[in-house]
Length: 256
Ligand SMILES: Cc1cc2nc3c(=O)[nH]c(=O)nc-3n(C[C@H](O)[C@H](O)[C@H](O)COP(=O)(O)OP(=O)(O)OC[C@H]3O[C@@H](n4cnc5c(N)ncnc54)[C@H](O)[C@@H]3O)c2cc1C
Ligand code: FES
Image 1 (cartoon, protein in one colour):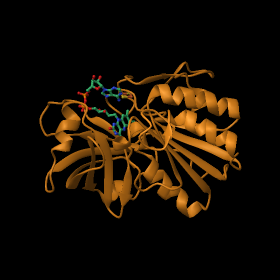
Image 2 (cartoon, rainbow, N blue to C red):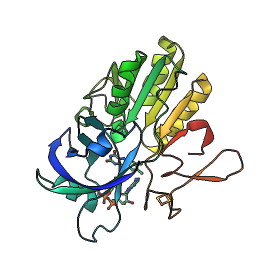
Image 3 (tube, rainbow, N blue to C red):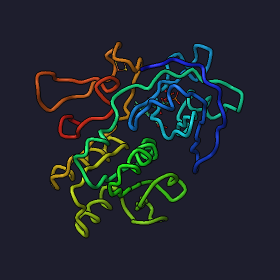
Image 4 (tube, helix red, strand yellow):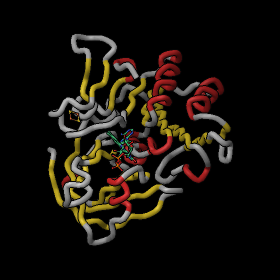
């Protein structure tokens, strides 16, 4: 069930260079949200910024919900300035989750590029009781931008080689797949479009099912404004809506 709530902020903490984690209390969201879903957040009581801002859920713990973000513009700058006792107006959970419980894989390969790490800790927590093998691959520009908490079996790639593999995360995964084939794998990923495109090509080439969570521009977040089209590769419809039909899609069904 989607709720709109004014939620008390518990803390805003740093989680890497320029990266913030916002924790707020919302029992209704914390106990129902699934990995890959997002919340649409009104950052302030004023009309500036007018639109809500979408964020993947990073983590839940008891009644607590956490979001992770970099300061990009006005909305995220206001969120970074929140303190304990402030509030955020949150709408969610929204969108489709990753299909993590289908039982159609025995190795979950989690891939995050930059702050595309956002849905991976909640995905990891969902996978733990399922007793499947998990392999996590993170890519970042530099070591300071790697956000590696709450993840299992982690391999890291950095563009500048300051941590782990020197190169991008898709190259790292390709190397890992060549070295050690994972039993019955499925990829779950989030990150920049260019990364998801390269990852999709690798998944198709390797015959591995792959779900990606998109983070493109959005407005209403609930399927009304038609402002978040995603081109489909086949079927009757030419476009899907990122906010309502996604943000999680089978990579084979969309044109990135
Ligand atoms: C489903 C979904 C989940 C998301 N999850 C996260 C998350 O977990 N953490 C996180 O940091 N961000 C996430 N984002 C992106 C986040 O919503 C934007 O960074 C945020 O809205 C920026 O708001 P702002 O007011 O600070 O910046 P604005 O002032 O709105 O924008 C500043 C600049 O960034 C550009 N921009 C804004 N949003 C996007 C976008 N989505 N893609 C590309 N460029 C953009 C604008 O065009 C502008 O140039 C997600 C987006 C979606 C759709
Ligand atoms: S953001 Fe309005 S329809 Fe998707």
